[in-house]
Length: 260
Image 1 (spheres, one colour):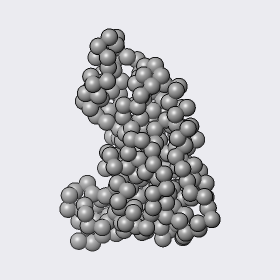
Image 2: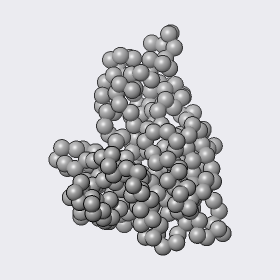
Image 3: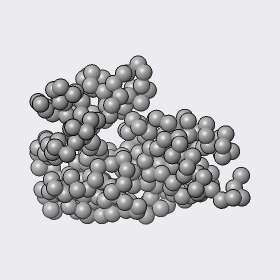
């Protein structure tokens, strides 16, 4: 089986799609992602895609200067890996393709310091793949997020999570249900409309849906995930996109009997 890593551009991204979304006419999340890519590409955003013959699109790595990262991190002087995934099909998983994407990213960055947020939970690459590629953990944030670096120049200070800023940001959402999302991640579009309807019909809540329109807004997120979270009465109940059914289950578990 032949594997190839290619670079997407604003002119070619629609030909390959992103994260499993391929139909520009059908998928609003893809159209929004393409627009976001076109906006940040001149600022240094890059996406490398893993192609299999046969098999097609099987993974990607997305990275950009940390000043434009969509995570609440302080990482001045770093390039930032925003997203990594491999394998829509099981036969492409566990074969080192993720490490190959990281290696291609590091090579393209030409010995710039690199940073990434990883987690032991859902919807983000585990830190182990980055540790194998020479990264090290420099900070952590609850519930299960790690900030890792691959440093070529140790004179540059290590990055950090904006923990105090995250805690302060969370205070804004002490009452009711808030959904925060960014088009950086196309999965933040899926299911949100259904969640809003469920919140209204089953839980008598009118959600506040906040769209993060730039990197600065995402860096001010109360969640280490940055580009998505759901908050109920000042508590983050999901750090990543979830299904409508999962939302229902979470709400049943967190609501008090006296809640209206």
